[in-house]
Image 1 (tube, rainbow, N blue to C red):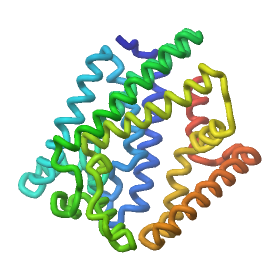
Image 2 (tube, rainbow, N blue to C red):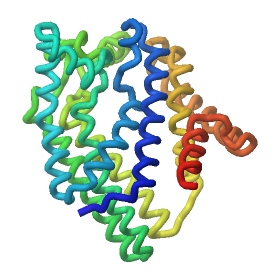
Image 3 (tube, rainbow, N blue to C red):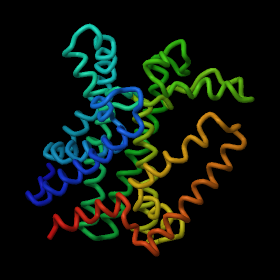
Length: 315
C-alpha cells in the first residue's frame, strides 16, 4: 500500500493543483466563445484536468496497487456510458444538466470521465519509478523499467484489440454525432483534401473510448520506459533526451503558446504542406524555449511561476 506524504507535501500537491486549474480557467475565458460569463469559465481543458489529477493521484495513492487497477479499469469501461446518459438527459432534468456541466463541461471534446482513469493508473507506474530511485541500484532500475515496458505493451495490445468488440472499427458521422463530439471534424477536414478515400477514422484514435485510453497509456509507458532505461540503466544522456527535457520544462507555457499560432494551421493547409511546416514550427519553438531558458531563466513563464510556488512552500 502507498503511504501518504506528510502534510507539507499534501499542501504542495493541492496548491499546485489549484494553480493549474486557475490557469485552465483563464484559458477557458479566452477561448470559449460559445458560452456566456460565468459559464465560459468552466471546461475540462488539459490544464484543468492536470490540476484535478493532482487531487485524484494524491488520494487514490491510499489504496493498494490492485485496488487502483480495479478503480482505473472501472472508470474506463463504465463511465463512457454514464457520460452518454448525462448527454441524453441534460435537457430533461436540471440535476442531470448540472452534473453534465460539471463532469463533461460545455466543451465535450474533453471530460473528467473517463480520463480520470489515467490519473489513477499513473500512481502505480509512478510508484515503480519512485521505488527504483529510492533504492538507487541498477537492479532496481532494471526491474522497474521492465515492469513499465511490460505493462505498456499489455495496454497497447488491449487497445488494439478492443475496437473489434466495440461499436465499430471505423468511426464516421453515421455512428457518432459531430454535434456531440466536435473533434469528429477531422473526417470532413481529411475529405476536403486529395485523400478523399478516407471515410472515417479508426476507433482507437477516437478520444474517450476505452481503446483510445489503453493505447494512449500504453504508448506513453513504452516511451517513458525506453527513455528511463537509456538514461538511468544504461546511463546514456544523448541530445534527444535533452530536447525532450527542454519541452518538458516548459510544457505549461507551451500549451498557451501553441494555441496562439494554431489558427495558421487549422483547416488552411494541404496535408503535404502541413507536415513539413509543423516540423519547422516545432523546431522554432524549441529554439525559442532554449534561448528563453538560457538567457532569461524562463522568467516569467507559467512553469517558472509553478517552480517558485513549489520552492516557497518547501521553505
